[in-house]
Length: 257
Image (cartoon, rainbow, N blue to C red):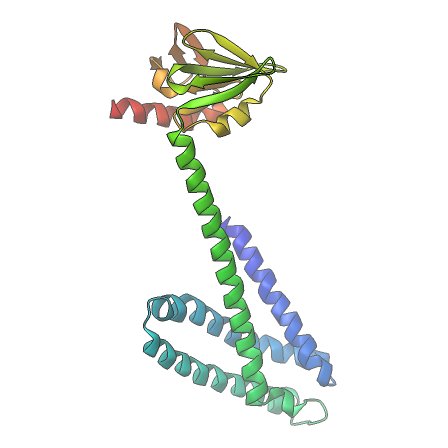
């Protein structure tokens, strides 16, 4: 996940670099000079953007400290524009050698650079807030789903075109076979064509996947080792894929009891 976010950030800033090069290169006679200028300008934009989004907004704007937010925003504005003008001066004098035919001076005015800089800052801020909002929405939906699963008291399955409600405290384990699933309860078994993964997603966390073919009610397990669990005088295997999580969950339940 970390690598993916890093790659997205790199791609985003490379896109900004290309965009800046195209913007300045459109009015300048040298696209190469526009690229060099954009490369020098990019660190200022990145630092300003991250200072605004990672420091000013969460520390002052979101906490209601508006006076300090405005004050530090003004400081940031002055400092960032100062460094932008230094880059512009360096590019004009050193790179373009004061050739006004090569560089459009209006394009590197403090007004134009300020608009360009803070347009990128605010767009980046909007994108970041939108992504955070989406993550929070997904987290809330996930928590609601988990809560609903943990509070449910029964499992609804379809057997022979009829719906059957099975109390969870009577359900021992579920076994997946070739084309169907066998649900073992205190009083017998039910055969359904539902997938074991689908049933697992419907059940609370107390129902533990120990094998690609077995889903057990951890509260009904009478004993276990690192390779198997026992219930109803039946031994069920624990596969390597589910071993770590299964053992940790069973040990945790054992300690609580």
